[in-house]
Image (tube, rainbow, N blue to C red; front, side, top):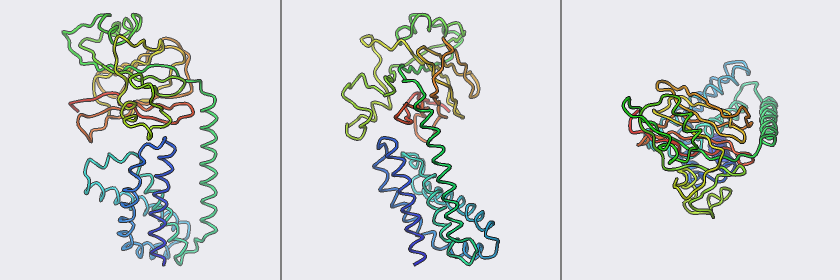
Length: 336
């Protein structure tokens, strides 16, 4: 009976955490939940062979150290789960659209804590209840703090232009080269003043209006109903086609990159104005050029480059007021 409960706790808890994450992200990744539940069940079955060792270890130490061991075992076990899944799927493991590592870590922790309470250790359900209360209160405080910051933030209205820069000592761009990508003369001059030689290129942009992603290519798409509109996710992820018939928002965030990123970079959004982010030629640094010092409470993160697929991609994470976080496809690279 103990083994059956262990399997059920690990599988159900992991799947519930995955479901909660998907629901809080507008249903993105719903199709991955059922396969993930199956993987969790199979891996929980494999775990049965080691729970006897856990119980023996728990019985030989003080209940506080038993609790510490439970966490350590859970981390190792989760790592093994990920390793097994990677051997099965290889780089395709990255196709799971939610943080399955966190889901498993929580599920394994809950199952191992249950095992700890059922062992000969003095750690009992009262201790477990206290731990859950502390964790629950911590999550509640975090949620309330996030909600307050979310409400205090200003509505977001801007376009994002991701300019790929190919450095070349001989190449020299003009103002007109930037204007065709939707930049104003002033924004073009600011970039030219940085003495960036070489060529620039983009053919898409991303629009955020009243804190919602907008598809100018398909105006009927609704960001709040991603799963109900075929192709909606792809349009939002890869942006809107940039052409001369579309008037861009006067407030723009222009991101200029020239090579893949190995560490994420975060910056505060401008408020009712434009700003330019230019990547250093070497390393993970960026230069922020703000056309006004007014800032919103919301932040944008340029994620580290994902090398698991080809071409390699660098995404931009937006934190949208009342809608949570969303990743858009910013840049592609052919070389690491």
